[in-house]
Amino acid sequence: MPTVTLIGTRLADPGTEFVYGGEATACEGCPYRDQCLNLVEGRRYRVTAVRENASTLDCAVHDTGVTAVEVEPAPVLANVESQEAYAGSAAELPGQCPHTGCPSHEFCEPAGADFDTEYRIDEVVGDPPHDYCMLDRDLTLVEFAPARDADE
Image (cartoon, rainbow, N blue to C red; front, side, top):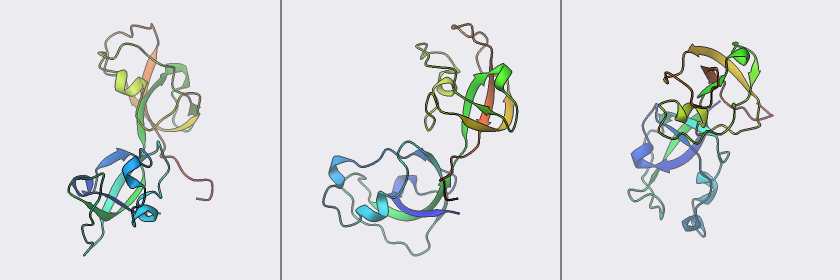
């Protein structure tokens, strides 16, 4: 079920994904705090709809203001150890990687997923974008299921 929140107008397009960063210092005293700060910090979300006739509200964080949108948790693409890469199984990220220039780095340390946390694999995508893992890991690219709250 989608959640209604306020986000910057530049992000307010269906399909846009973002990782919620939590409260900024500029949020203090804002009259719209409760409508903006209602997501889970560190979770990846996808905009599913922009609310019809929603006003653009002034915001100290977003230079063009904020508007009401519907969002839902989004899946995360990640590399996991190949022996753990089965749809429906649980897997963790293989660990941090110092090789930031590697084409797979964004999948070894994906935004919206944490180390030492198990995620359910929705889909096995296939080979990761790198030719060779500099940490000699045998990795497979998968899609983690979107995070869900305990009451969903």
